[in-house]
Image (tube, rainbow, N blue to C red; front, side):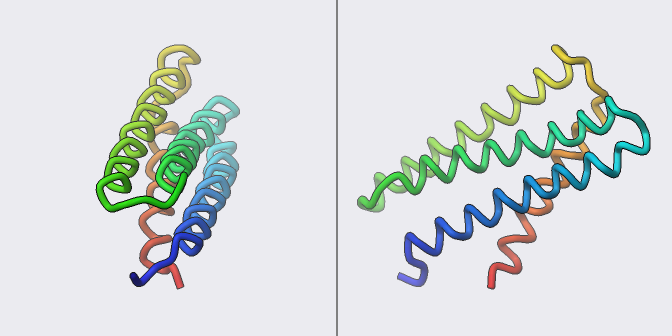
Length: 121
């Protein structure tokens, strides 16, 4: 085994914190366009961070065999997408925030997610 469970937990925590930092940064950038745009961008990125936190909490909930780990991973991914899609529905339809800002925040948080795996050392 190349990675321990503890290093996976540390990486997940680092990704979540970086995604929350991206939410703050994207919110500050969109503040130049207005308060509603800033809220939409920050909320879109925060939904991704919450989904990542939920997925990692489900995946790292205990030590078990490969089949159980795969089941936890798939369940975590499913829960992550429920949080992200549900959050976007709430952001766009209930609060009626600008969609471009929300999707930009979502994309910024996912860029952090992908870059964190690229530069994990």
